[in-house]
Image (tube, rainbow, N blue to C red):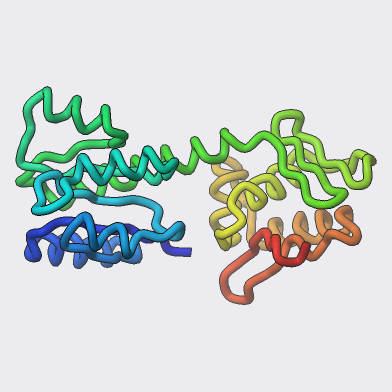
Length: 227
């Protein structure tokens, strides 16, 4: 699933440049030309905001403050021509995750976006300790799955596959994604290896096997709707 980015800047040419290049990088992109418009367009599907600081109406800093005050933890990268140390400190103090000075290079923006998204994904995974659904409990710290109070005997790889998908229930993982996460340094691991582990995992899940669903042509995902 493509990650969705919201670009917020009152300069339309900058929005067009960022939108064009981010689309080429494989992201989905929405554009807003003011903080007020950004508030209307922002959804839980957005993974990151590229936010201009100096705009008419609500400033980028004020928008960030508002989002953080409301408990919204979406990563924010500020874009601004103001590049003094105090400006940067202000950006971080109101909840910014990174700060890019104008004029900027597209390569720099791309690198910063990738880094912030990767850091955010890791933090979200680390924050989840347990997931409880009816009689099924996944303890991510203890590396243990129980169903109706009974411990399900999973191999290390089976648990890691299940935990990976359970922590990211909105994402479809291709076989290549799973291999990259779990067998990055292991040679000769094929897509068939993933399928075999998924089959064994589903068998051990019993009545909960439908939690892992396949998307033909795409891969596998954790399907909470089945519960």
